[in-house]
Length: 338
Image (tube, rainbow, N blue to C red; front, side, top):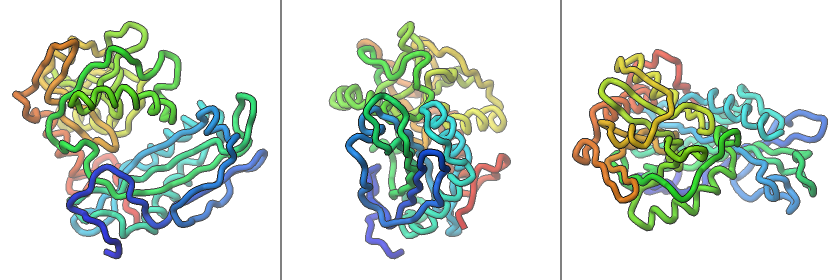
């Protein structure tokens, strides 16, 4: 490979790749053809809607190098569709999902040297859509920009695929009912920075947010969707004010169609979680991360004696083998870059 990177010590931090894709739209016109340019700063007005009013979205997906050298994406069209849905909610023009996939594939192809070797990590792909046009009043931007950049990454949590410690967050909520918790909006993540800082200083991997209406049902982890296992049933919070995660959808399909589990999307209470057999969280960055310990108001529950539970392990193995092209993909989830 033509880049000088320590593949054995990758963390989840930005290592800028060579090129990024940029497309812009103007009032009354569609998206331009887009260009590839070296990764670097973008000129933007101080009055840009994204800077003043948070009119911005992002996506996250990965490319992995298979054992035979193929570069494989995982469900990129679903990311494109989710971005388009988010754009409608935030009054921005939709970037066509098919063009989204084409831009992602070409960005990866142009930065193929940055895809880690097999088993050493993945290339994290970050598509963004921002209201970059200048405004003064609270209104949609007259111009929007779509960008795709990439970075090689290792595990999101430093513990890797080992059970982590998570705490229920009582002091702060992530999103409000009927708000934008189901949209991958940039402001949703800014709101989690301070709570995450507090709990990580106490030695926790992340916090679990509760619903803003009754403060008793689980919403999601700060950066991932939540699951717990009770017997032969897999429970996960119902959609509404949580993000419709693509890894979440994949895990539910695998649990139902491969493992034969009953999958229930419902209001998952704190007590449901504390009395479960296993718990884990899912996301593009986190993949499937086992939860070893849950803490609520000083009460501590340890799952599987601190080891990875059997259902969590099976789901992780199935999902990662599909992503690497080593397991039959009956759903057409993986896509080759070549």
